[in-house]
Image (cartoon, rainbow, N blue to C red; front, side, top):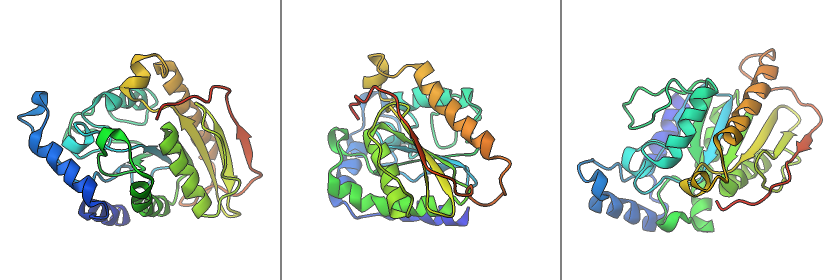
Length: 255
């Protein structure tokens, strides 16, 4: 926990992207009409969850009036309104609602983070901004020593997951994005399974591109892997075994 707290504090203090800091602060100053009485967070948003998590979710970035307002990933916006009920149904969250940092929500065996920690204009981060933020994701990965499954939410989140695996010596770590695509990789000492999911954005959920059953299937698969790994020695990632891939045919994704 102390390692994750130190990372969270570093994230909140981050000034690597002045343009993003300025944008987040301006959004917090102007606010959205429906949130005009709220005190916006307006800073980089740290990861959130169980310090002993075996499952990590990697999203895109804070929403301007969601996480940038509440200070917690996927909290206070439509994406979180779709995701947390799915986590609750899967037994990975203590409640289906996520409204604020002090709403009592607890995650079970799960840690939620993002490829970018500041809200980007038009929800489109630049490659340099993603590079600036990437070291924080690596540090979180290293701190979660029991990690077994990583779910990338959207193509950017999934690309960040594969980037982490490559940086930490896991191979193979290449797989085209598709909802439900899966890759299991080893670095010779431990094994991580990466799973891709459409992002639970309003754009995807309102159009039916991502449905509740589709999303539930991602967490059902993650839980299956965690159940299979439960018999392994505590305090370490699973022992190496030959890598395998599984992908589903639909490879379209907006973000």
